Image (cartoon, rainbow, N blue to C red; front, top):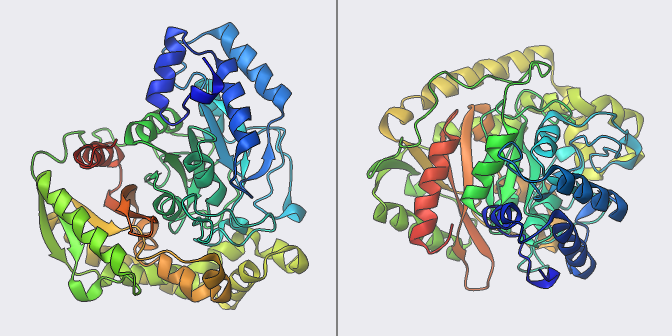
Length: 456
C-alpha cells in the first residue's frame, strides 16, 4: 500500500488491515516517517525513535505476526516526555532535569507487549504544570486548526501528534485537565481514567496522589481499545488500584439517562459566545439520544477546583520537584517556577486543613450522583491565542481549568469529546464526567453521541 494513502487515523481500521496482511508494520513505519518529514506542526517532539529503531521494531513485529495477544499490533503511538521509555531521556521539558531510565513505565511496557510501535517523546508544559502548552523551552505546539491559538496542555505535543496524523494514539498525563483541554483544542477524544486504573510507575509526578495517565485518540473505540491494554493493577505502584469486582456495566446509560448541567449563572464562557452556542447544541444532542437534563449546583465542584491551585494542594507539586527547582532556578520556566516555588509557603497544617476541606466538599457533591448519571460540561469555556496567553499566563490558564480542575480531586472519571466547530473554524469540546470506574460506560455513551453527529 502506498504510504500517502495509508491512514493512521483509525486504530480499528489499521489493525484490520494489518491482521489481513494488506498492510505490514514496515508500511506503517514508512507512513509515519513520511508524515513526520512533511508535517507542518512544530515543537511536537522532544526526542524521537531513530529510523533504524523503527525499522527494527517493524521487523520484530513481522517475525511475530499478528495475534489476539497483540491487540495493538503495528499501531504507532507517542508518549508525553514525563513518562519513561527505556533508553530514552525523560526530561519533563526541562533539559537539566533529564535522566535516562533503564525500564519502561508500566503503561508503556503494556503497550509495547501488545505490539504497538513507539515513535517518540512529546513536548509538554514543563513538569506538567499548565493547561496551555506554552511553558516549554522546546517551543509551543499550536492548535492544529489555527496556529495562532494554543494547543492546550500540559500534554500539548501528544495531542498535536495525534490530531496532526503523525501517530494513531498518544499517552498524556492529567492532574488538572492536561489530558482533556488539549483534546478539546484539537478535536480529539481525551480519556481521563480513574486514578490508579493506569499505573503511574515510571511517570514524573506533578501531584502524585492525583496524577493519571491519559489517552488521546481520534475515535472513541480507539481510546477504549488503548484503555483495555494499558489498564491493570501494578503492585509496584503504591497508587495503583485494582478494579472493583463488579465494574460499571457497559449498559449503565440505557435508552434514557440523566445528565447534570450547571445553573445558567454558573456557566462561564469568558465572552466566547460561539462556545456557548455549541454547548447548547451539544446538550440538545444529548437529549436526542435519550438524555434528561437536570440542573445542578456547580458551586461545590468549583470550590473543589479552586483547592488545586488556590491552596495547599499545590504544595504536592513542590514535593515532587520543588527541591530541583530551588537548586536550578535558571533551568526552569519562569511561570512554572513561580507556581511551584509559591507552594513553599504552605505548612503541614495547611495541607491537613485542605484535606479536611476536600473531604467536606466530596461529601457535599455525593448527592449529585443520586440525581444524575453524568455531568455534561464544556471541556473549556473558551480558547486563547498564544499571544493572549503569554501576556496573562496565570489567570487565563485558570479560566481553562474552570470545568476540569475538580475531577481528580473528587476521584471521578472523564471523557472529553469533540462537539463541533466555531464559525472561525476552531473546535469546541464537551466532557462527560462520571464516578470512578465508569470509563467503559462513558465510551459507550460518547459513541452514541458521536454517531448521531455522523462521527465515531
